[in-house]
Image 1 (cartoon, rainbow, N blue to C red):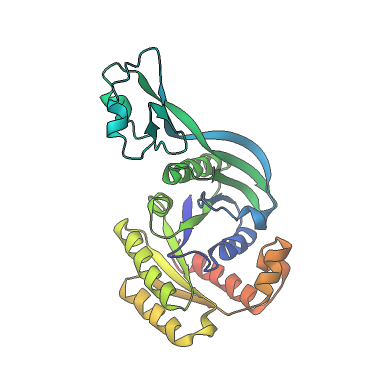
Image 2 (cartoon, rainbow, N blue to C red):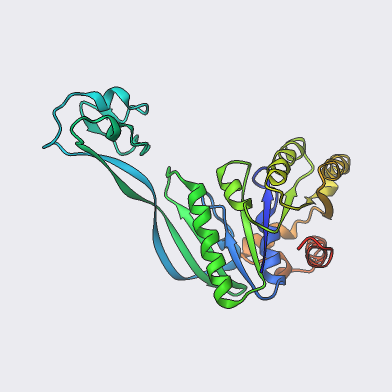
Length: 286
């Protein structure tokens, strides 16, 4: 069983569009959406939930007034201004546990809190593991790990050959959780200065974890010069410049319809992504 994660140094490069097309083109696979802060793969795949569970990824400090001697030590050490007049504001509490640690009467205890939902859904293109953090919730990296573990469990049960993961954008904790232990990464970028800059950062993260990487330039024809710069950068960082996808208005039409591009049209971008999938599967990346 192999796992391919699609990453991008920044949001809005077309990462989910490419993954949605791969979901339609691939056989014998399980899907995962590791962007738990702002998931949108489900918008293309029309999932029907099969399982839904609470995710407890954070803690909240609770004070027992019967044990509390009102010494004020908890309020002194709280770095988030979450304790005022011995009252704990759950909106400010970060669950660090410092107040519970210093309380001489053990009047403060930490309680797990529901910070998101974890789903297993059926789609026309296979089973999908995905999740959503509650607004303002933390521990997105841990929830990404939960999503990937769910996808692996289902893939083992079904004896699937492949896991396709829509990674989180950027280079932070969710991206690290998306990349660790995968077989290959495909970075989707766009030919802009910010696209070039952020691609370099995410390729360095992939290299740190020794993940073989390839690069695809989306909307390459809006700036051919920067596209060439991106491909030179990729080669210098031992990432394979794998494909170019042209700007295509049919992408927006397919997204509005809520279907993968390759299912909606045979446009230039759809053909380019189909060719990209053939390269991914036959050129030794997986």
